[in-house]
Image 1 (cartoon, rainbow, N blue to C red):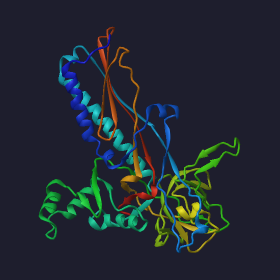
Image 2 (image 1 turned 180 degrees about the vertical axis):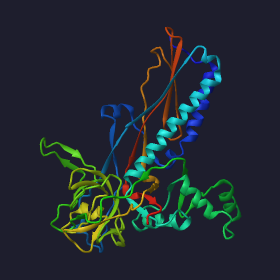
Image 3 (image 1 turned 90 degrees about the vertical axis):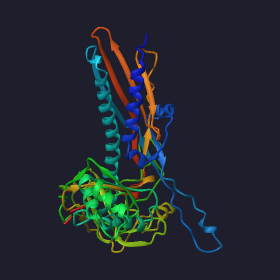
Image 4 (image 1 turned 180 degrees about the horizontal axis):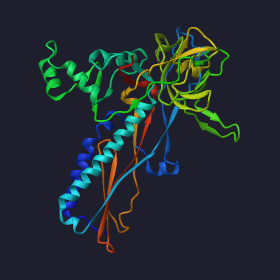
Length: 425
């Protein structure tokens, strides 16, 4: 017979769940994609999510030669985070009902933190727009640089978020406090509550933790080829064919393996530009006049590394897919184009993103309710489920409790998310 919950425990679970939802600040700032449990189980908990189409347009009435097939790019998204917070209480400890509540509250806080950290890790490690600022955080002008790089590259101007470390957030609040030219309420709130709010087109969020990035140690002599005949030209493809089995598989076009002169001291997370490789507006394909920023995703050998985004230059007899997804242009092609590192000093990472770039995938456990364990479930407004279980062991007179959640996080569009780095002198 199952160990049933008494009324006090049901009320406690409701309070735990309410607090859990309140703590999921970052999950409300990203999109949600609901998964079907049976489909995910059969697909190994991975589903391919489509990236936004980018289309071409042409002049004139006669479009006879322009009816070309379009390429739909997609990204693998997995339910890769399985988080649990277990604890045990004996029959003496359970005489104090408040202890159970405190343990449940702590478990709830940890799971909410796990979800927030997962989102921040993906945003900090896979975002490709890089805004280095020489000085410490000072306010509007810093965030406006993030707004500018997004606008110039065609990122939608709505639903933008910026997550700042407490140090940088409070520095911005200090800059806003007691400013006579601001609305009184805005200035007073910044002073009294260290609150920044909306700034330069972003909804700002304060983090009680932040990822960090070390100073790049790769040196100034590393080069990469941007020549027409070089090995680093990238052509987007929806499908790739295995050379061994001829099996057709989806291709992840967010990343590119490039060959460089050396990867000595280069590490994942490093940020860089390439000489004469300029960003273009994703829709118009016009050059922004500013160098394209890239991130190192992994170092694969002494001369190869994986980067994001890929260099799609459409510079040599481009096919339709290259014209669709071109993201940069090369003004001076060279077999030895210089790589310039942007993270010149260790600092905190402040991610920013357009809501459509990041996605959370809530998952569900098929926990049986008739196997001797009491089970309660609840889902947040954005679909994240937590499962509360209780099981009593008559042999030890101890009761085991656990809170569990299953979810995935994916960066669908690294070119719609970025990082703001202060102190880069």
